[in-house]
Image 1 (tube, helix red, strand yellow):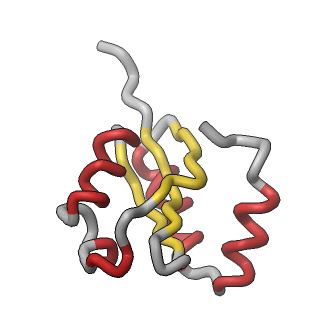
Image 2 (image 1 turned 60 degrees about the horizontal axis):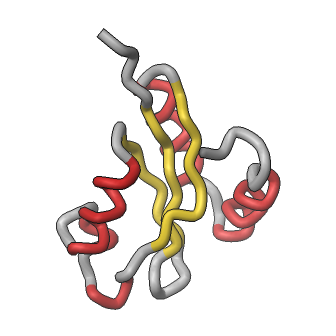
Length: 92
C-alpha cells in the first residue's frame, strides 16, 4: 500500500481573507470549497471563489494538522509573512 500524502493548504478567499486547512487530495478540496460544500468558513458566496495559494506536504496527518492549527493562530500580518517566507520552499 502506498503512503498517503497529508497536506496543509492555504486558500485566498474572494474577500481577500485566508483559510488554512488539511486534506489528502488538494484538487478535490478546492472544488469542494468552490462549490460551497467545503468548510463552513468558505460557504458564503462572498468568500467564493477561493484560490489555493500555498500547500505543504507532510508524511503524517498529525504533522499537517499541527501546521494548520499553528497557521490559524497567526495574525493577518504574520500569515502574510509566513506565506512570503514559504513561497519557494516546502510548497507543492
